[in-house]
Length: 255
Length: 324
Ligand SMILES: Nc1ncnc2c1ncn2[C@@H]1O[C@H](COP(=O)(O)OP(=O)(O)OP(=O)(O)O)[C@@H](O)[C@H]1O
Ligand SMILES: [Mg+2]
Image (cartoon, rainbow over all chains, first blue to last red; front, top):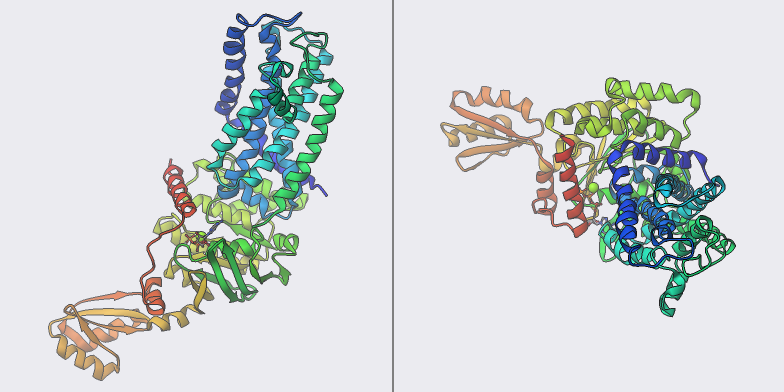
């Protein structure tokens, strides 16, 4: 049902382009760096540390989540633009199913986002974190699943918002709130009830929480993870599947 | 091939009850002003849009219901380039070959053939964004042919090209049916371009207002118009009427007459009217003339929707930047 040639073409194309465009790589890595060191660094003077975790370490999983969020959504949203003016049309008239196109797009979002997350992950020694190889593998795996889920979510958005003007709408009203209400910058358990509820509906929350579970498993207080690792993984795996299926359906619609 | 096709976008009827048929191996031209519904028709034929009503078939497959079969049978050059500019020419062709599952043993060979065919072999490993508009167009045609389609759609293939490259591209396109046994369906604004077609349909506001061979259509406007300035218009007109049995009239100090083959007619005219002739000019019938004749108005100035305007902006932006 999934045509591997289509998935291969989409992934290979985007990866090639990504590697070639050095400027894009630098600018996507600039954001996490700024947040981590300027905001994280500044705020950790204000925010008292947890038992073993300082504020800058606390937001590290969140920053990984942010890297993945932005890069996955951006990679998917480019469909809107591509559909009208670019390469997407070439793929849409090719003899491959829409579902394969969606899987290809989600996979390429996954590959690119995970790649970037790995680069950001390399910063951990600079903020005084210690991770063993198992934890590192764990982070990479969670990043991959989370990227796939978010890229699928992005495709879903792209198939509902047909015009490119909607890009800023998506960024300001969906992506930014998703980031702030994911427990990336402050623990979900400290939020007021209403926001806590919204956070629980946010897919990114579980991704960030899974990363927290892996990065500081022994932390118990304020700064600890909010859910169990099992819950987190169950939620993001389920969402990956649900999103990619719905996105596939949504993408099949013709005008 | 197409029966009573209708496509509505909300209140806009972009394609309004269009029917036509294209024979295998023919070049079919779809001629019309901006916003006539040409691209919309192509989008329906190539399975990107569903028709509101009516049927379209390619190779006897239903474009709406049997999309997979139709997609295998067609190649397309879109109005807006769908090349990937950040990839090289060869990579663009390679990905296309994968996408259409061109056999591994043939892949390399077909790509090299295609590159040679469009004269891009020595630029094959350059990024497409460094190509000129004409090179891109040629590459796109080559790409559309890699999987040996039965029908090749060309949506305004000469858009944004200078006259020179336009002629070159046309020469190239007209060789395709014989070389690749492919049927060509193309759209254009220009009557001259439609000249090479075996059959033309003129579309305006979603309706086909005329169709036939180029010669047929020219008869609608009465062929070429020849304008003469002479030292004695009255006498010249009398002579022409007598000798050629043609309609002649006078306007703004010039006499003019229409002839099916103007260029062949001029020498004879000059021989007869002789030294009285001060100047001669000939006007080929344009889409505008056919239009004028059929609708009684000039080709409308574009007053497209917001989307059309944005597209036009992006196109001109791209054209400017493609030069770099
Ligand atoms: N997706 C769309 N949504 C709404 N209206 C559309 C859409 N696509 C096309 N139209 C409208 O349908 C009409 C026909 O457009 P179409 O693109 O088919 O024209 P065209 O003949 O290709 O013109 P051009 O020479 O400018 O390419 C236009 O009025 C256009 O505004
Ligand atoms: Mg068009």
